[in-house]
Image 1 (cartoon, one colour):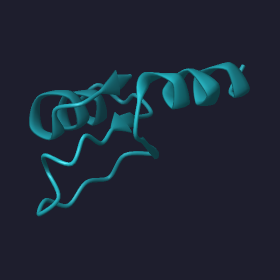
Image 2 (cartoon, one colour):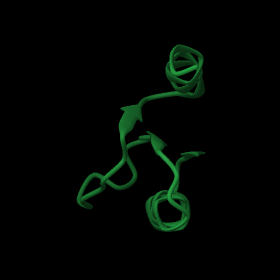
Image 3 (cartoon, helix red, strand yellow):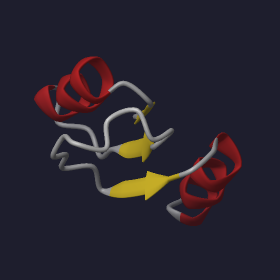
Image 4 (spheres, one colour):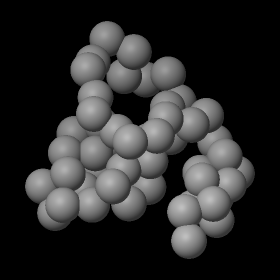
Length: 53
């Protein structure tokens, strides 16, 4: 699961038992998260996804 909304995407993905890649756009800097990976853009997320085959 790749998401950029902490509550809807990250919590939802965890609730479904998925591994998480969070695209951090700086809008949730004061919130804790438990994403497996944190990236700054979609290209970095794609690198992680390609490397986990």
